[in-house]
Amino acid sequence: MLSHRIRLGIVGAVAAATVAGGAGLAEAATAPAPGTSPAASSANRDVGVPSEIDSSAPAIAPDGTRIWGLTALPFGGHATRAKGTTQDGRAQTKLSSIEVDIRGSGARLRSSVPSGSVIALAYPGQTAWGGCQIHGSDGWVWGWLTVQTSAGWRSGWMRHDLWSITQHTYPGGGGDPTNLPWC
Image (cartoon, rainbow, N blue to C red):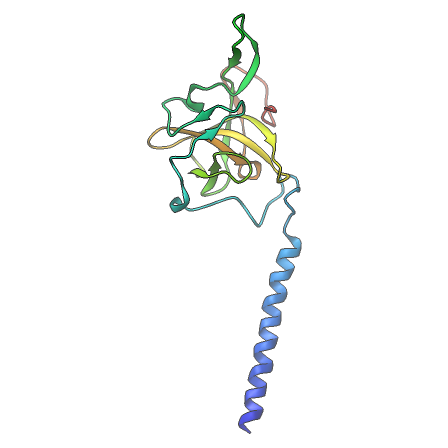
């Protein structure tokens, strides 16, 4: 009689594990692949926790410039896109940004695309500006963003499914942008 109860218990445990395992497989099968449209919701959102922040890592700007730590100005006063050259051969730049909304709590701001150090986390309601966007080698679109923290501005790269355009520009700009310009 005892062995019959043990067998029933084992069969019940296997059945429960199969159901739980099946649910996990179903979720994995429906999760979007990395090449999915950035607007698609992802089961693997690039969000994190404060303990993973490496505040000493520099952000690599679209032109390759390293931006270290917090700055007093958005993008560290660094331009987001080059616009030709000056007479002495330096890049002629214009700081142009579009306000963005952070869509994920603890959205990772990375030093480089796609798996650079996490240099800050952003949360809904924080002021953030987007400069330009690129296609990452992981199939996602990444935005060059700057986020206002309590101590200053931090610039870096954030995956597109974690931010969206606020629908007004600064400075000037006019129009109603739907995407950041390409870097």
